[in-house]
Image (cartoon, rainbow over all chains, first blue to last red; front, side, top):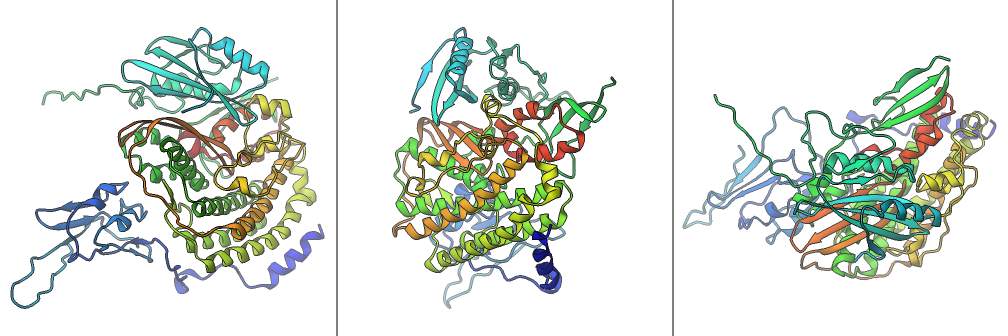
Length: 126
Length: 124
Length: 358
């Protein structure tokens, strides 16, 4: 029984091992796979390799209307799509996905570029 | 490329299992594969000192195969599972869960065997 | 003598996963016990026939949350043997490091659950606090705390840099210090010994006859550890299986505790010996033929039977997990024990029911 006394004293006198969560958040590590980030839609060529390799079929690519859509609730955050994209327009973010009230896909449509001045493509979430 | 595999018939199964017991092998597991042309492939794997010895039996669907749970009691779980998932007809198991070990009444029968699924639509 | 039947239900505070036992009792002593599983059957073996063989790695590592790295390792080793792919040396050592870290986290989780099952909650919290260090280092090196998705066919997906290797070594030393403090509470405490010594005895012949694997067999005197066959860089490391001879719950606790020390030594040896080089090899073609691959998980020996038919989808993937082989030993251990010992006994087989039912 006296073997435990040293342990008990140490536990009583040191500071708690837990942190007060909503007031003090932990920084995620640098290479954490938190969620699939937004795609850089201007660089995408709509080859659909990411949709074919996805293990849970969470990505839908439509070549005719130039849109790329991801269902973040099906995504298992494995990172295969970021490795196989030939144009490297996908990346993994470190923040985990937060809860929300409705389940909807995140859709990005590439707008056609206007002619004379170098135009910007817009992204539209719907 | 499995080493040490031997093809036997289902009548020789109990004799070979008894032989393995005398030589000191332990049962690892049994595997069932649906070969597609109404045949099932049943493999039994035994192990002694980290070396495997395998047996293969090819039978048609619906034929009976004796249970080795009289010799190796630990075979009851895997034989019940093969009976429920593939429809393999195993007789004389020591503990028989009656088709309810993994599946429930309103599940599809024998889900892992290759079967035609017909969906009927009743008239409006 | 009246006999009553008590259901040790699927939901119980002690069990991490649902398992049902029908206990036939005479007054406080168990006379017969029949286990029933089937509450978490997900049909994963059928799903692997539908997805492509490269996507199956991500399905297979989600069979279990506690032993997930070794599932992916067994699958990748099987497919690599079938397609004759030679994995680079650095990848083999990286697989060993992640596998041994996973073994430490699984054993610490189990030690905490065992302390919780006989009511010793502060020891449970201390074991899990030590486990947080392992989870943090996994997140820092591999990207995720539990399901790390770092094994792939042909090698690994991520590399560990030199600073991280040094950090793993430092944290392994800290875990060794922490374990020495709680080892005294598990192995030398008077009340804990009363609950564990002499409970659920399994002799050596019975363990062999029922096909027990892993720490259950090693606690009964069978010196069988699958890592000694030398897959994935274990052939170049120096270790011996941890064996005890008594066969009761105390011996099983001692085996798992000493395996944590063994894993820490293995990690340090692997970090000292890891060579430079690439981490993965390109994979072309389709798998064809049959192969059996076996790996030592924290709970025992897992066996994979993979059959391919030269297309992108596999024809059959069969998984036999160690808890599937350990559950029949309950038919031998439970009759004759008291009702209050049933939760402790059930936890000493280290049940991982989601592995069993896939």
